[in-house]
Image (cartoon, rainbow, N blue to C red; front, side, top):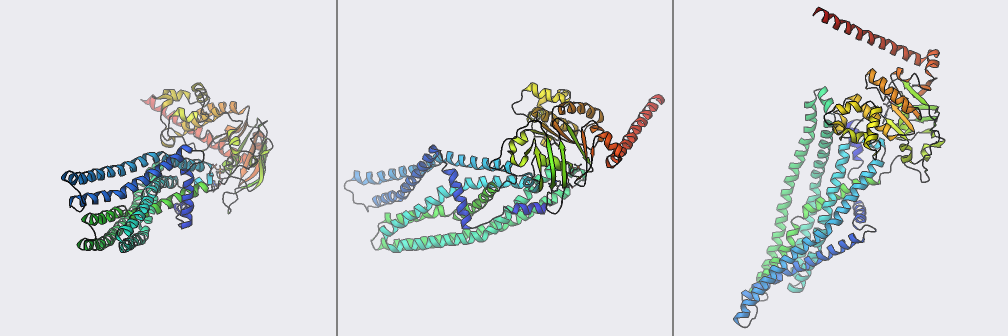
Length: 630
Ligand code: ATP
């Protein structure tokens, strides 16, 4: 798949903005914040809200105490006696200090109480997504870039964190505060004050949202380029060796830089537009503040207001404007957070292609007989891969599938493992159609040694015991011995604790393959699928392992996919696949007698083996001659 196609697939999860979607996203998030059966968390939500309201009420009261102190100092408040004249402002100042401390403390307590709710929601959402990703099909994963996918989760979790912090503790409290302060203005100073404040706030909010909407395209471009650069960087680093083989460091850097350059361009535009936004906001706020303060000053001059009340107007206005300073940022981030979360919720909502039926049953193995009946399959609609393939592997026997590269051999094993569903026909194990069986029990009974082994970036022991997580050390060693890798591991300085590196790249192809064989032996499945399990081994090791594999296959049903025909001469039946159809079948002797496709393949390999043997002999003779001359 080209990178553009992969990008297109990722775009399926692209921004699909609408108020409806946002509302649905918030509702989905709410389920995690108000989780069923978790009364402890619900109590925390209620308590956090109570502290939030208390902090706000005290917060709005703070300017009153300050104004009272000012009035007491300027002699506006009537007091009798010097003691009281001093005590009143001092008391008010102490009250002012205490109220401020309480506002802050209540805010902090609210955060401390809520943190467990937020973290629990984050953990569960991330976990659900991760679990769901493992439920989605192989097709889904092959079509997407892992880097891009992990980015969706990362951004969404960041988005949720932001949304919780700002929506609950910034936007909602600010709205409450604006409501309270506007009412105070109306009641205490008159309609005009409340009206001007309201107009000023509305224009501020309108201006901020409008400009932020306009700026959003730069942010989106930044995000797009960021995802692209990240996907490219990860892809490039995963292919580190390939990059070196083709000395493409410059090409890779240029591709990465292209995305980074576009990112930088978008970031610059975003910053310039932010400057515009901030200057505009400052203009509106100052305009409103000046207008209301002028009216207040006039009121003081006319003796309608005290100096304290004049100070109160200023303090209250500033108190609303401070959180509004971040409105543009908060609006944009919340919107972005909603879009990011939507993408993750879309992932969670994505239906797995391969699903268990509601009435699916556990696989019951009796003989381990495998049956392919008229199986037709295609990965994509435009190309048929398997055409009416029918064969039976009797329980406890071994069948080999051979054929040219791309004939569809590995596809047979992917179908049996139910990575894909077939388009027609049926696949049965002991008479049970694999579509009617629970995938988990099907896969528990099948052991696969794949063509390309990829290992976890952990120790050799971890990778072998992946076959059965509860295996004892002795069982791991026994499996390694059967896979002819135990002695090699013991020779390593760190033995079984040797780290295998990213994707197991620190091991040779043959070593990786033997680790894969060992972990499958440990799994001890009823059915074995060996997809060129020994292709990366030298002839001697291959012969040794072959013995082990034959021994393991004795009591089970096995399908062996092989290129080297000498490894399958003893199997019960050989299927020769050609262009997705079974061209010939029979055992080794029968197929040779037929003198068909298999015979030709055999002849070619014999000639090649003979040529190789002669070459080795010649090299040996040359070496001997050199030694004698010396
Ligand atoms: P080899 O001996 O080279 O491993 P094979 O016989 O095992 O080949 P398969 O892996 O079964 O071949 O692939 C059969 C055909 O299906 C190939 O032409 C391949 O390009 C195609 N194919 C394999 N996987 C996919 C996929 N996920 N999407 C589309 N086409 C695919």
